[in-house]
Image (cartoon, rainbow, N blue to C red; front, side, top):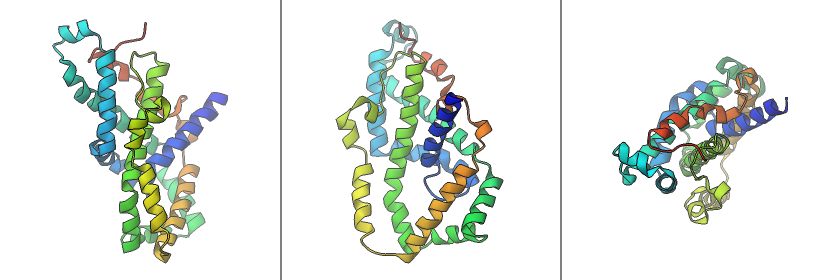
Length: 247
């Protein structure tokens, strides 16, 4: 029972990242590949991948690399592809846990029958667009943090010979400084100094949409290990680039 509660709590936390913008589960699921692609193409994403590359070069078995004709400088790109593949699987898996029909019912019951239509209309408002554009770097950074946090945890639990990357866990201050989250929060403070009724309405509906998302999560579909479960099998891909188990 305790493990089940922890799994649900971890999934709810990951859900907050997956459903960072107010929208239907179908919209969230459809946008994941593009969002993850953008996240890894960002400066912070490139810095995270560079750190992953260092870890891979340190941990890969030299004899295995030689036998497979893999040059050390190829590991970063191949590692990136692995994390993108399994990170996408995690984010899509979390999105699929939310029941679209139940979400629509919960959102309509708390925010009103026309709330979904109003929410989409508000996204076209200039003030809301400005807010969404400003927060996009933070959204992408949180996606990266969520993926690497769960990847690192799976690597640790599975006793895979690979050093962690997620900077909040490793204390890597250089990598933390490259995260746009703090800078975005400061920009938001300035933005909110100017009032906007449409932006306030959008944020109010977003909170109700978030509550509806949590209420519509199919808890019986949450894997026993929460988000970690979506990485089961990544060790096979890692072994292809000569990353094995810890001795």
